[in-house]
Length: 261
Image 1 (cartoon, helix red, strand yellow):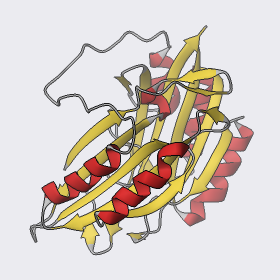
Image 2 (cartoon, one colour; image 1 turned 30 degrees about the vertical axis):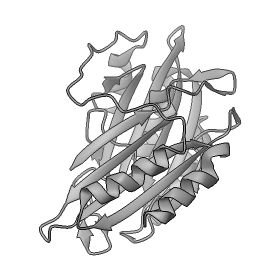
Image 3 (cartoon, helix red, strand yellow; image 1 turned 90 degrees about the vertical axis):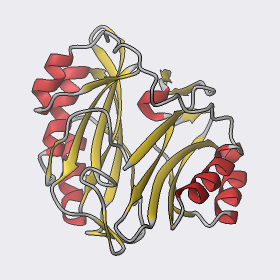
């Protein structure tokens, strides 16, 4: 699987008084997976301004790339951003990539950084050890945020194609320091229908705001749903509340910054 990210560093997004780092919630990513039958599956998520949405969907459709979900990740915020999940399948990765490039060209998205470019991890003003202990997994510094990822234990298929482990069904939780040991937290939980109410109840009890409950794909098995969340406060306390919600799902720590489908 090949994956690349496109942070929306051209936008200054503010939600509930917090300037949202691109790594926290305002970024796009696309993945390409090659299968044994020499076909390519592309899955992605594009963060677009509302003013860009119509042009982007038109570009995707004109290149045969499906839109499988259009929704929000943040509560009240400016400028208004919408997230589009994409799905493409065909014999040629370049054809899919050119279609996605046409969609990106309808936005102000800056070019992706070269995969060969590496920058030292920042020292974040967060109790990352406390977050790790609360969540039961080691997170990773990813730009301006600390990110923890859990993957589903099930085998997930997209139509007749088995998705790589951790692809398309991860719970990803990101912590952006806001000072005084506090963080703005944005994330999404990958859940089955039978888990959704327990997860929602755990989030509510923990004081975590629920942004949306929705799907990302159209032909996934088992059928996955995603709960997007938001919280601002003591980072370790929030992590403990999130851990209780994670415990209501069939997920296991994945570690690292990849994830967040």
